[in-house]
Image 1: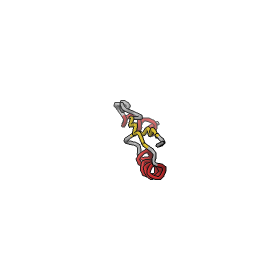
Image 2: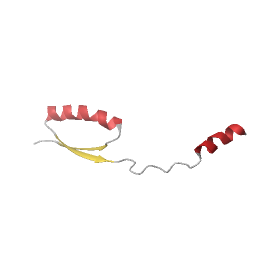
Image 3: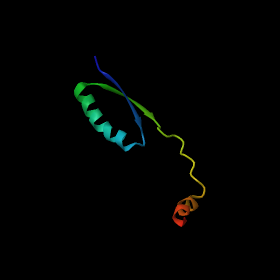
Image 4: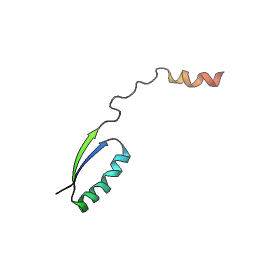
Length: 62
């Protein structure tokens, strides 16, 4: 009976990308079946502040 592995990964994460190679090697050795489950950890980018320059310069001017 084959082992079944569910691998959840963020497809923009470099660490998840690095984990795929050893996972594939182990799955070949153990004859395991990998089920790839991609997801986005941060699907919506956070809204940036409008006046960043003013925010950064204000403490220096005090």
